[in-house]
Amino acid sequence: MFDVNKIRDSFPMIRNNPELIYFDSSATSLKPQCVIDTVVNYYEKETANIHRGDYDISFDVSKAYDNTRKTVAGFIGAQDPNCIVFTSGATASLNTVAINFGKKFLTEGDVILTSELEHASNILPWFKAAEESGAKIEYVPLNVDGSFNLSEYVKCFENKRIKIVALPYVSNVLGYINPVKQICRIAHENHALVCIDGAQSVPHIPTNVKEDDIDFLAFSSHKMLGPSGVGVLYAKFDLLNQMDPIFYGGGSNARFFKNGEIMLKNSPDKFEAGTPCIEGVLGLQSAIEYLETVGMEKISEHCEQLSNYFADKLNDLANVTVYNRGSKAGIVTFNLKQIFAQDAASYFNANHISVRTGNHCAKLLPNIINASETIRASFYLYNTFEEIDRFVELIKDTTIEKCVDSVL
Amino acid sequence: MMDKEIKREIMLDHYNHPNNKMKIEDERYRSIHNASESCIDDITVYMLCEDKMIKDIKFDGIGCTICTASTDIMCDLLIGKSFDEARKILNEYYNMVDEKPFDEECLDEANAFDTLYQQANRIKCGTIGIHAIEDLINEYDRQQ
Image (cartoon, rainbow over all chains, first blue to last red):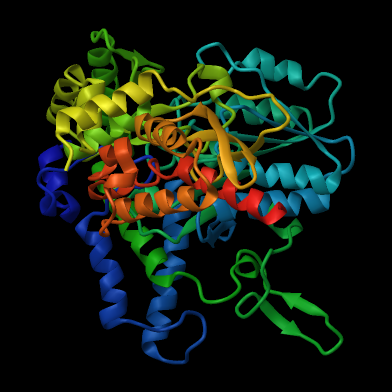
C-alpha cells in the first residue's frame, strides 16, 4: 500500500522542516534516511578506494560499487551491467555522448534532430558537436500545447541525413511523456541513433531501455532520492565500445607505454578514470532499493494524481494560467495573471513553499508556450494533497501588493 | 526608515508606470545588455553622457518588480548627475542592500529597498539594472 505518511517519516528534511512545502523535486529530490545512512556509513565505517587496494575494506567497497551497476541495470531494464557508466550527472553523461558522437560519427551535412522542449544539457553539447563537425541542428515541430507530434517527427526523416535524435523522455517544463518507443523505432528504421535525456523520467516512471530500444540514456542520481555528484550513462554495449572517453587517467587503462600508446580497459571502466564519487554511487544503490520498495508504478500514479489535482484546482482560479495537465512526472507549470513569476515565487517562499521560476533551462520553449517566465511546481512521492490545498489557498489570495510586501 | 505602505506604493508605481523604460535607438547612447547575471531578468540599459555628466538613462527588457522598480528609480536619481555624484549614490545603494550603514539622504525613493537585504534571493533582482548603470559609467570613463 502507498502510505505517504510513512514515506514522509523517512525523510529527515521533512521532519526537520515541519513548515516546509517542497514542490521543487524536478530540480532535486529530498533524500530518505537510508540514503543518508549509506553515505555516512561509507565515511564512518568503510572508507577505501575502489578497485585498487589489497585489503578487505577496499574489496567490500569495490563489490558494493559494482553491485550498484547491476542494480541500476536492473532498474532501467538493461540486461548487461557493463552498459552502465557512472558519471558526475546527467549533464556529464550527455556531454560524453555528444562530444564522442560529434567527433566520430558526424560529418558536414549530417543532421542532429532535437526539439524546442530540450533542457540546456541535451542541446548545448549538440550545438558544440554541430559546430565542430559541420552538422546541422534541426527541430521537430511540436503540437500547439508543446506535446510531441509523431507525424511531424516522421516527416523530418524525409530527404534528411539524420544521424542522431536527441530528446527528453519527459520535458522538465511541461512534464509530457514522449513516445520514446516509437521515436526509437522510427529513428532506427532510418539508420539514426537516439539519445534520451531521462533526468525527469527515470525518477518518476518505470524505465525499460530494452523495450524502448534506446541507444543512449542519461540521468542523475540526485533527482531520484540519491546523492548529488552521480549520474548514469546507459548505452548499448557495442556503442560504448566504439566511443572514446573524455577523461583519461587512473582506473581506466590496463597498460600504457612510453611511446604514448594506451590500452584502455573494457567498458564501462574505460569511461571512469580517476576516483569516482564512491559514496554517491553507494547512496544511489539505497535510493533505488527505496524506490523499488515503494514501487515505481505507484510513485508515478501518485505524482500524476497530485499534478492533476493541482492543475484542476488552478483551472478553477480566475487569476491563474495553467500550461499543462496530466504529467506522470508530477510537473505543473503555470503563471499568475499580471504577476511576474519571480515576484509570486518570492511570496510563496515567504510562506515556506519552494517552487522554481524562470524558463527552467529550456530557453527555446518560450516560443512555444508564449510566456517568457513561468512558475513550476513539481511533486514527488512524499508530497500530499493537503500540501497542494494549502498552496492553492495561498495562490487564491496572492496579489502583487502581497508579493512586494515580502521584501518590505 | 520609510513607512511600509509608502515603500510598497513607490515600488509598484515604478513597476507599473516606469518613467524611464523604453527602447532607445539613438546612436549617441551607449548600451549594456545585462542578461548574463540571471536567467530571468533580461535588461538593456542605455546611457547618454557628456563631459562626465549623465544626460540621460533609459532601460528596456523583462524584469520582476524589484528589478524594474530599482532600475527605474536609479535612472531618476542619476540623470543630471556628474560621474562622481553618481558613484557616491551607487555606493550608498550597495551599502544599503549589503546591510551596511548608508546615507539615506542621497537615496531618496531608493530607500524603498532598505530591507531588501532580508531576502537574500532578491538582492540580485535589486542590483541587476544598477550594475549595468555602473558598468556604463565606467565604460564612458575609460574611453574619455
